[in-house]
Length: 193
Image (tube, rainbow, N blue to C red; front, top):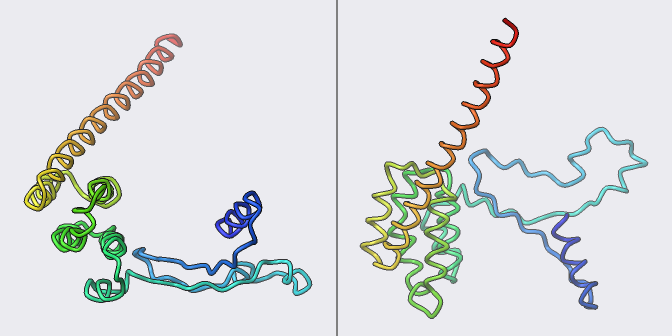
């Protein structure tokens, strides 16, 4: 609903005719999608109030139920294929590893174009920051990407180092906060004695 209103606000601000919006939900979660209309979220509402609830339908694309071949056949655009395969792999580290070569091959035509390196970097960033990828498998991912493209391999190594440094800094900060809290507690106990 907020996306629809946001688009209409943009239409109004640009003095444009309002567009008809067809809501599309792209779902890639682990749980089974329960299809509900907006009004279904208000089951015990008085019938006199029901007509005040926005009532619209949406198109559901549940990619969590599709296999990789179905995804490849579904889209013409390489970018859509790559992003959908990434979404499909989001919750499963093994799928990320299994599908990485396929994802890179499907994206090759985009990666090789002018500014395609930016899309490649976005894909790599999503793999490292957006998926469930444990540190022990980062080296495998870097090797697969480096075998595909040296530029991507360099970016992957740099990103992995950055993430490790980020983790170290968070650990130090957390340790300092915990030490400070424990120091205050010890001081309070000694002050009561």
